[in-house]
Image 1 (tube, rainbow, N blue to C red):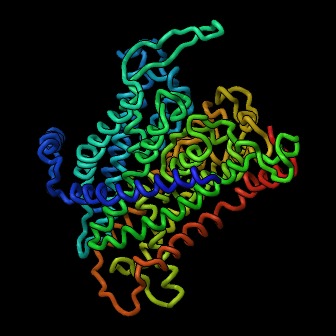
Image 2 (cartoon, one colour):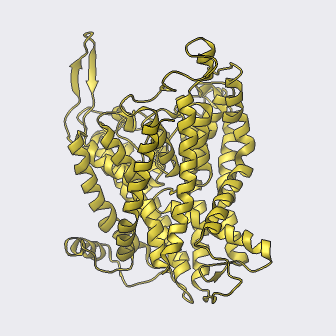
Image 3 (cartoon, helix red, strand yellow):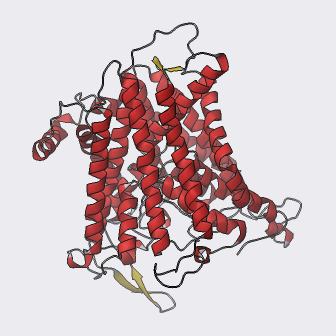
Length: 587
């Protein structure tokens, strides 16, 4: 690691800390229904949505009604996108004349964007028309992000309220999220990216000749507007196959820095929103501190691993065998515009959040460099995490942490003045088990399944034939794919050919499981907590805003993840790391 690299990491963390309080305080006002500096401009739009949709903004919902709204809204929007993709060739804004999308890929894509995963089993610039990008996909970048934030606000109300049976109104929360948070930030972000050279047009693709005289097709499109909400909503689905490594999506080091800030901006801000809504900002900063510690652990592991590179090259005489380092570090799959430090930082940020955006190829990372992003997702996407989902996921671990602390001292656990009892613990554990069961279950099945590459009915063959590598790295490709799907992340090792009926279908089911089977138990727990009375603070109350709680929370997150996924990881990136030092590669 270099001084310059450490300075860049420190600068990023410093700017993030400075932005957390103002964006968090603003969102707290928005969801409390208070006036903000944007109220005069955006209140008419909010009121128009309520009138058009028949929403009573003063009505409150129980957790079952809130969950019903989440499921209904998500289901309708997913079906809408599926239908539109199936008939895209007959809609306008398709200058390339792209064909309709196949049924299994349409299912996978609609579910992917509807669950805030944005996994892409296709090459965007040769598959999706401009109309499909905007009407079927980018709309989901707003809708799915709004769903996640709305659920987080409902869960916060479960801790903040007492002796009530309601958690707010899903339709009001999601509308305010889009109108007051996502829209203005996306407009500002898109204009900022345009200033850096990110393009925004509806032109036909450009035909050009290379220096060697070969023909080249250069994609065009409304990239700036899509890039902004892609990062702010922790969506990640790019308009170009190279994603944020492409100069049309991410042209400069400054745009790269801005995009990394966009990914963490709302998740970090929500920790302060939590503190404001429970009337103790120290609680929010405690969650922020735990997330930051876990984030920095991941950054320094990836950065040091990528800077050291591949020791096999040292043995080949490319660099001194004494230092066992690769000259310049491992630059395979990375953009020279960003280098190792910004590639490592982006890798950790995008997998800490449920954002599939990438500015380098994760498949080309060193074994330990590839281990970290996989573990980040397997921990539940709680290290800042997706918009909304990161906060309610970390609150899940906070409840488990105080439960464990209560067991240590023989006292009924409490969190924010609420006794944590059997029902809440059951719901929290159910959410944790869903993550582990679906990731490991789908990965195990995908490793041994027999299906034809292009059809369900033709003579079957091993699914692992779709992998780019064999051995432990091949297992990592499968494990990462289902980890990313269940964690609603969307990034990939990319060595796997996932555009097949088998993978499109099973990954689609994994994304649905990871989103909704975790979300519903948390809403149930929030509904139960909202009905409880506040317990007065006593001498035996475990403080949940100090360094001891932060350390306990970090430990619980790491231990739960390590105990659950260590056996699978030991067969993939961990054994690959040790074999690399014995001179063994996997191709």
